[in-house]
Image (cartoon, rainbow, N blue to C red):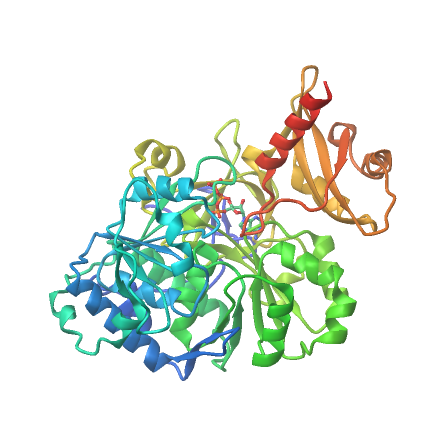
Amino acid sequence: MASTPTVDARSGFCSSNSVFYSKRRPIPLPPNDSLDITTFISSQAHRGNVAFIDGSTGQQLTYVQLWDAVRSVASSLSDMGIRKGHVVLLLSPNSIFFPVVCLAVMSLGAIITTTNPLNTTREIAKQIADSKPVLAFTTRQLIPKLAGPIPLPIVLINDEIDAPIDNKSIVNTLGRMMANKKHDGLKSREAIIQDDTATLLYSSGTTGASKGVVSSHRNLIAMVQTVIGRFYSDDNHHQTFLCTVPMFHIYGLVAFATGLLASGSTIVVLSKFEMHDMLLSIQRNRVSYLPLVPPILVALINAADQVKAKYDLSSLRWVLSGGAPLSKEVIEGFLEKYPMVSILQGYGLTESTGIGASTDSLEESRKYGTAGLLSASMEAMIVDPDSGHPLATNKTGELWLKGPTIMKGYFSNAEATASTLDSKGWLRTGDLCYIDEDGFIFIVDRLKELIKYKGYQVPPAELEALLLTHPEIADAAVIPFPDEKVGQYPMAYVVRNAGSSLTESGVMEFVGKQVAPYKRIRRVAFIDSVPKNPSGKILRKDLIQLAASSSSSKL
Ligand SMILES: Nc1ncnc2c1ncn2[C@@H]1O[C@H](COP(=O)(O)OP(=O)(O)OP(=O)(O)O)[C@@H](O)[C@H]1O
């Protein structure tokens, strides 16, 4: 008889197979295999009334209007010949119509692919060549970005029904589609099963070329269940969220275009992040939940006195941080300035269709620096990157994840899929982590970003967190600087507070006193701001390039 694996209730670790099991209540997936994400969300019971509010114009979409719009757009798409398996590109800043497009496309079994409006025409052309969309939704301002070698028919996202169709690529407008009340097109909708592909999102490309991540309806349904479990387990009272993070990224997509709609939340949408607009929207709409990325949190700390004097933030209860590391020092700094607000953490990847671990309560968040507990039904292994052996609690190695939200694979890239997903469904996250005796995950750094000094590994995130504790440092990034003798050494790019006269040697001494000799920063440069991507990650490759060009120009 096979023995039952013994799982330690405190850590979730099973010593017989070295797997960490989630400590959260498992979430049963809907048994009906013939189910798409849109039907799943729209069939959830809740008492919500207003789904979306445009943060700048105040325009609202109620839940009744939202689902009516989704059906109208789906029917129009079907009339245009969009079928299951077709890829549809969405190039748009955040808007209350972004989710309408996503949900309509997915309801037909077609696949939504999104892209960053800040991408160049060349980058977008590359994504188009890879994903081969048959149609694009975009705004009038962004049409020139689709001027690549493959012309695409365009649906204009425009809230005016009678927007002029004055460009030969424009085949329709979203306003006209939403006004279509016949819904005859839905009769030719094909059957969808949970395993069918729903989204083709591109990873951020922080550590290499961006890759197309294929997620299924099942992946998204499981993620919606995770979101419901995270925010609505105890009581089902109405909550208002502010959307500042981009909806084209997995973070924004699972929260604002899918997950939160299952429980009747109200979502105030900002087309882009701007500090004043964000704060004004919180005040005006009595926002209770603010999901953001770490740089915004840092900005809120730095400007705390002016912010509190100018805006009424009394409705704000929770800030959710995700997408990039958040140090203990930043958390403490925030709580000191905003004692009424609690911070929740979320950790995930495009490849895990969103949240893989999170803190869901104030008590959990008090484990400062943690990315949280594994999401419901998620399993983890910590694998020694050198030996490939799984490790136990409090040992650092690469985090592997397995569960119902893990992607199907990379699009048209069998090689990348094989090196990231193993045959048993384990996803190699590329993140260096440990899991403590209570089951909390701590992210040390990204494997690919470790600096190798004389064979020792130096995590840049640790040095960045330390630099941020300096009272005269507003922001910092640490990169590897190539050196013939030692391989690489840590170099810091530092943003000084206004009026600071901190010197290079001052920075080096500050760090040198607090770390082992191999971790010391051996080169410093001052900059005005640290380049970051929309999910808050430091664009280290840009800084590496900058360091290389400034050192060669000095030769
Ligand atoms: N709460 C968090 N704390 C620390 N790091 C986080 C957190 N959330 C996400 N991350 C980081 O973000 C990564 C996932 O990011 P994303 O899927 O946007 O693309 P990327 O990994 O940056 O891009 P690419 O794989 O193309 O380099 C995780 O592997 C992790 O390194």
